[in-house]
Structures are given as structure tokens and as C-alpha cells.
Length: 450
Image 1 (cartoon, rainbow, N blue to C red):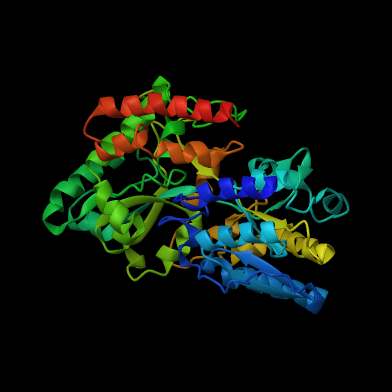
Image 2: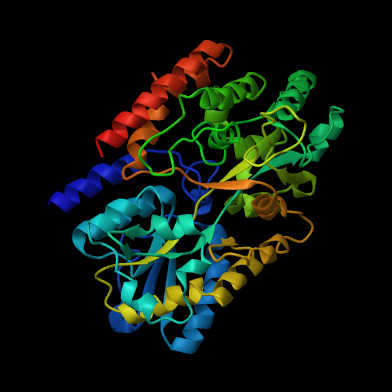
């Protein structure tokens, strides 16, 4: 009962959030998934079929192709169920409480600790030790560490993602504004957004849109660009209320003054506004490329690396001035899986070097395996998405901030008394500075109570 109560409390907070980073909300990969029947994901081990749950319909075809290749070798069938983000966690929680979880499923940074600590995921240590195809040193360290608890590994890194600036070339051309380059600063973004919003006012066009609920693909990056951290490297503190943190959020505030109003964003969403040709620029994650690649006006859509913060004022991007958040999902197995050997064989097939290259080549996602994402850049004919890969060499990455109970402080930061006041009133710098001070206290108190 204690486990069920813990899960209910923790996951309820997850489901009400609008998350990025392969999560839910308008800027997330879950938006195109379809809700399954109530028993989707229940085990069919007796029939020799592994049940696999994911939440992104954009990834289904590629993952199914890789799974089919594994099935041809193993003789074990794989049924992949696409479940939309909210229902995904509802069904997984119900399965955890009732004992009928899918065999294999995705884990996310917001929920991993709770599932691992309650012994709901299969301990993979012995499997990895005996598997010549898996060496965890070959994967992004942040993703490997995310799915560890008590010194044990509970998921294999599925992928990683980065963030880039997306702009509509036609809008820039229409209003005679210079288009973004990889050399742009956030000040350049502000100036261009102001010009477009002014010139496009009669047409209802804005230069920029920011969904403040989507932190990973939005305002988190500016905090790091200006030298602060949402969560410190030891996961025990924050510097969001420091001068550097306030400088980053002041830049966010400035951009919001010339961007689409938050009421408009809340009603329509940044992606819909952009694809309706009503917004010149947004930032987005690599997990969302397919949505724009398949859009009607995709020929006008261009990607540039995230802008940088010229903190030292030398007119060049120096180390530590251009950051992109990155996150990664994990392939996990139910602790009660009736076919654990077959299930591990499947996720090893997904995550070994060949599987990760295939995933990138098919344009599913960037790899969790280091050094094989170049193939991803070539997966979208006619659209240059190399900005997502190049930032790893020409910028810096930080892992999506998390603690044991991430959703507690993440949710609180969006409320009144924290950043909601600044989101709704971006004209007042003092409101944003106060919000940073309050955010510092919120995060520190949340960590102290974990």
C-alpha cells in the first residue's frame, strides 16, 4: 500500500504538467500518440509476444522496423502500443499497482526514481555484464546515471535530444528582417522579434513565441548560457536566484515583451502558432523535427543553433555561453516480466551500436550511444537539421535538471508566487527578479524535503 500511495502521489503530479523533453504538452513528442484500449500493454508472454508501450506515434514506424528485425532473428513477436502521454502514465501506474505492466516501456527523468526505488523495474546488472554488445561507457553519461539507483542499472539509454532555434524564412522575408544565423545572440533574437512583431501587428504575426511551461526547450537554456544552474551538478542545490540566474531570466523577460502573449500561447500553443505562419521563431527539441518536416509549409522552416549569451561582451561565442539542454529516455523492463531474457534481448537490440545507428538513420531520434548521431542529420531530405548535432561540438550540453522528486519544484515554479507572475507581467523587471529569488527558495525547500 505504501508503494501504491507513493506512486499515486508522485505520478499524479507528473500527469498535470505540460512537459517537454520527450514529454507531454504542445512542444512534446507525446502529442501525436493515440489512446489505447484499457488493457493495452498487458503481458502476452504465454503467446510468445512482448508487449511494448511508447508514447510517440512519430517514432512508431522506425521502432517497429527495428523490432521486426529482432523478431526475425529471435522468433519472438513484438506488439508496440502507442499511448498518449497522460494515459501512458495512468496505465503504467495502474499496472504497477495491479501487477500487469507492459513487458518493455519507456522511462522518463520525471518518474524514473520512483519506479526504481519501488522495485518496479528489472535490475539489468547481470544482463549487461554478460552482454558484449552493451558497454555503458559508450553512452551519454547523464542518461546512464539517470537510470541508476542504489548502484544498479534499471534501463538502457534509448536516445538523447538537443534544442535548436526554428524560424520561418517566409515571415522574415515578408517583413524584411535579417534571418537567424549560428552567430546570433539572444539579444539578436530579441531585436528581430521586436521588428517582426511591430511590422506584423496588423497581420497578427509575432516575432517569437515561448511556451513557458516547456522549460527544457525554452528558458532553462538561457539560465545556463548566463552562467547559472537550475539544479547544481550534485543535485542538492540551485543558483537560479544568483546574479547570473537573474541575468538569464531578464533576457527571457525582454523577449516575452515582444513575443506572442502568454494567453495566446496557452490557448493555441507555440507549435500551432508557428505552423499557422503567425510566429517567426520558436525553440524546439530534436524529438519534434518530424512534426515540422511533415508540415504544409515545411519548405519555409529552417533550423539554426541555439543563440548564445555574449556575457563577456567580446562579440564571440566562448565556452559556456551557448548551452543546450539534453535529456534521454530509457528502455526499461517490468520487474514482473514473464519473459525477462527475451525482453532484455530486445532492448539490447534497440540500444547496441547497430540499433542506435539504425534509429538515427531512420530519423526516429538521435542516439543515446555517443558518436552515431551524424546519421540523424541526413535523415530528413530537404531540411537541414544539423544544428541539433553541431551544438554538441560548437556549444555545451547540460543534462535536463532533476532531483529525486523533480515534479514537486517544477510544478511550483509555474505557480503564482514564482514565475507565473513574471510570465503574466513581463513588462516589469522587478517582478522577474523577485520570481528568481522565490524560485531559489522553492527549489531549496523541495530538495530539503526529498
